[in-house]
Amino acid sequence: MLRLLCVTAHPDDEAGGFGGSLALYQSQGVQTSVICLTPGQAATHRGGAGSDLELAELRRKEFAASCAILKVKRGIVLDYPDGQLHRQDLYKVVYELTRHVRELRPQVMLTFGLEGGLTGHTDHSWASIMATLAFHWAGRNNRYPDQFKRGLASYRPQKLYYATADFSLPDRPPITLPPASAIIEIGNYLETKIAAFKAHESQAPLWPRFDYYMRQRGQREMFHLAAATTTRPLQQETDLFAEVEEKD
Image (cartoon, rainbow, N blue to C red):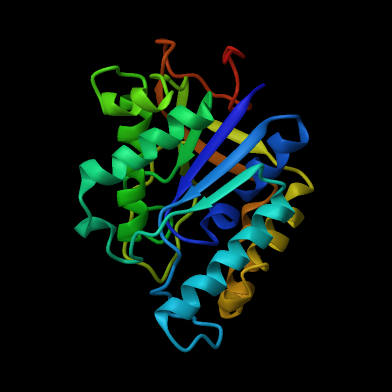
C-alpha cells in the first residue's frame, strides 16, 4: 500500500497547508497519516477555553474532527509546547518522529519549508527541521538503534516535500518560499479542505481570511521536492507519488 505522512506544528495546519492533497490521495487508496507536534495551546484565538490545558484538549478534538473530514487514517497529536519548539531538545523530538516514521513506513513525507510556511511561524520552521531529520535518520541503522529492540527496523522514505505557494500574505514579514516542483490539482477537494479547516471551531475568527486566500489560490496545492532516494534532475511533477516504488 502507498503511504503518505504529513508532519505539522499545530492543529489546523493539516487542513490549511495540506488538506487538499491529504483528501485527494486518500481517495486514490493512499493510506494517509498526520503527526502534529503541539496541541496548539498558545493560540491567540481560544474558543472560550479558560486555560492552556482546556484549549489543548479542545484543539485535540478539533484536530480529530478535521482528520475525520479528510479521512486521515491516523492522526497523532504530540505534547510539545506550542510556540516553544525552538526550545526543545532537538535530538529527543527527532527520536520520537523517527520512531513514528519507522512504524508508519511512508513512502512520501510532507512538511513545511524552512521559511515557516506562509505565516513564517517559528514552530513551522522547526517542524520542517525536525521532520527533515526524521526523514533522513529513519533509514540509518546508526540512528536511535535502541528502537530496533522494540521490533522496529530502519526504514527509508522515498520522497520529502516542503509545502510552498506562489503568493505571500501582505500583512506578514517577508518570506522566501522554495520553488514549486510539484503542482497538485485538488479539484473539488478544495471544499473538503475548507470544511476541515472549519472543524477547528476555536479558530473561527480566521475562517473568512482562510476562505478568501484558499479560493484565490484555486484548486491546487504546491510543493517543493526537498529530497528523494532516486537521484535525478529536478522535474515538474503533477503527482507526489511519481516514480515511487510500492513496497513495505
